[in-house]
Length: 227
Image (cartoon, rainbow, N blue to C red; front, side):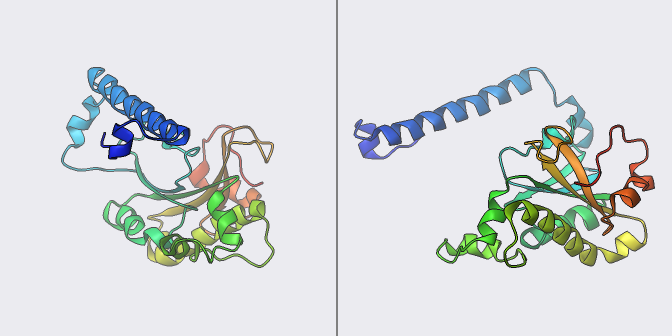
């Protein structure tokens, strides 16, 4: 690690030291865990896909550290083409989403929002004084005046599905793609279980009773639809 001269000389505040300690701990964890991963030879399955990938889902999720691929797929390698940004937006990641759907031909586009989304709260509030690059991403949201953060998360999920439906209308109409909007509830805010993934929207349909009868969802155990 490279530190400034003052840090090398030991001239730093307790706050600086705490940041450096956290960084060292994190890097130690990452590279030690990678070494364990290599030692266990867990990537044997990659030998067969070294020259190409065949994922089954393009996933657009929030960058929030509480939302990880391990919450929805025990074996994400070659299964999930995963795209992350603040607020699980299509607009700020259109190229990546298009690549997954139209070039990797994933049959599923899964958009995952989550409770307590900081990006949604920021976009609902006054963000005029935030840095330009951050404002640019927050500007892509579309919220009605006075909406709460909780309702904003759900509103945003439906908006993102609508955007995806417009982008990939031919694929959806030809039954080559199903677009699903879901919310990840790590607070059990909707009383359906901690860390539950709940479907809110399927190809533009929002009625839980109709969604639950979709042939795409046949065979799913303990399916949760609607909040």
